[in-house]
Length: 173
Image (cartoon, rainbow, N blue to C red; front, side, top):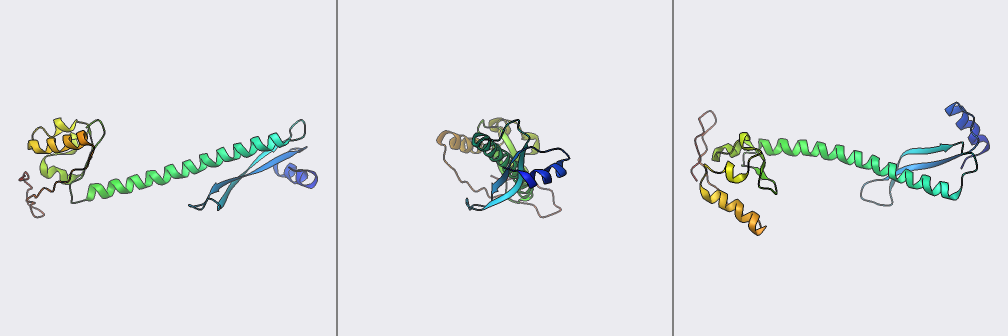
């Protein structure tokens, strides 16, 4: 709560006459230590027609927490978006075949190496059974088994890969 000299200073700062005010820090958790807070701003309420009460302070404190959570969420979203871009770049540049199939069985992402077995970016958005129709049936069966059992299945495929500059043919599975 502010009064006297503080009201005069705030009045000068905001260019208005300040009768009363309530200031609340906006703080966010710093790192994983829940006791370490970072001040990200100050919430200011001015010129209530009557004096600010303990209830007003509680409401402003909650509002400051909500603002803090919104700021933290925004920062987390930005960090997550940057991480996704970095991971996608890493996945797309991998020499190991990489394929993502969503819970509905639809191909979501594939890197260039998957072209060695006949899966390309044109297959993105197709159900895996349709995308794998031209491939040996064991691949479709292997993925279906993972969906049915909800357990991982690891199969290593040995491919004959052409040297750089040579034409890459179909994989021998």
